[in-house]
Length: 174
Image 1 (cartoon, rainbow, N blue to C red):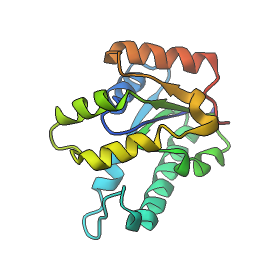
Image 2: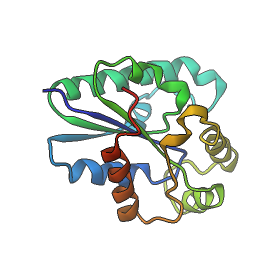
Image 3: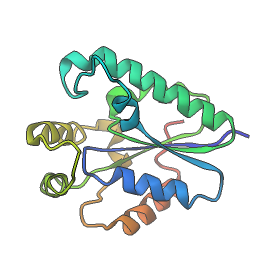
């Protein structure tokens, strides 16, 4: 039996990694927390910051690797919580999977996002990049219904809200 895939997306500092970790750790089925940042950090030579236009080909390759890894785990019976800055521009390979795929966007307001980013060590601190990525997640069109406002929620409350919307089924891509 195949596992389900949950793509937990949003701008930097939205709470994705903390929430995804708890979703996978407390899952009722075998589960994997797939941290997409690790795929980018694996590039040792020739790395381009993913938010730059010249990173387009790199980003395509990384998404392909993420989708391939996700597929392997899901076909092996694991639920997979994919945690990353995966916007609508990267969803087609996930939509093409012959698996149950849900998409949830954590999106606190910009002020909260920037405040959280300032408090992180070793993570993206570039205000312009964070602001741009936040803006990209504010233009979701038909995917706006996939948003969970995590701004006023702590990690536990956000996990509970994500579980609630997943159980309701309205965040399915496939």
